[in-house]
Length: 109
Image 1 (tube, rainbow, N blue to C red):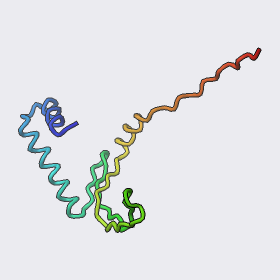
Image 2 (image 1 turned 180 degrees about the horizontal axis):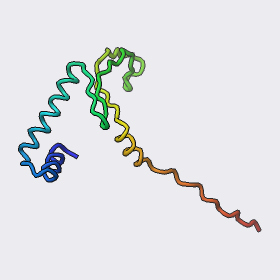
Image 3 (image 1 turned 180 degrees about the vertical axis):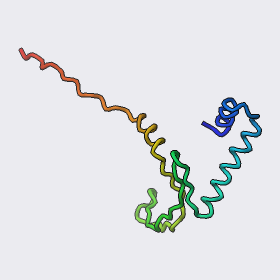
Image 4 (image 1 turned 45 degrees about the horizontal axis):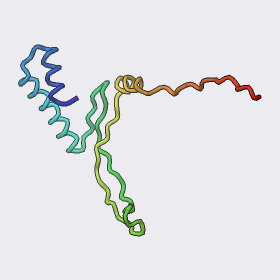
């Protein structure tokens, strides 16, 4: 789903003009981005939580030159933790493991 798809669906559901919906959606995303960029946690009940985490510095290896170590500095990343309702919806997409079918034993001559 793209932002455009979201705007069209909201516009159809509410009867609002698409340009107004686009402004609201964009402003919402801008506010979320601004808050996360300041290091704030953004919690949207029943949807999820956006928060900034700092990854520790570590040593990596170049696959083309594995004998050489590469220093990877610490850096801030955005983490998303889905809310309970979203998690419950997504878990339904988990494929079920095929059950082992019992084969009848073959007769040996």
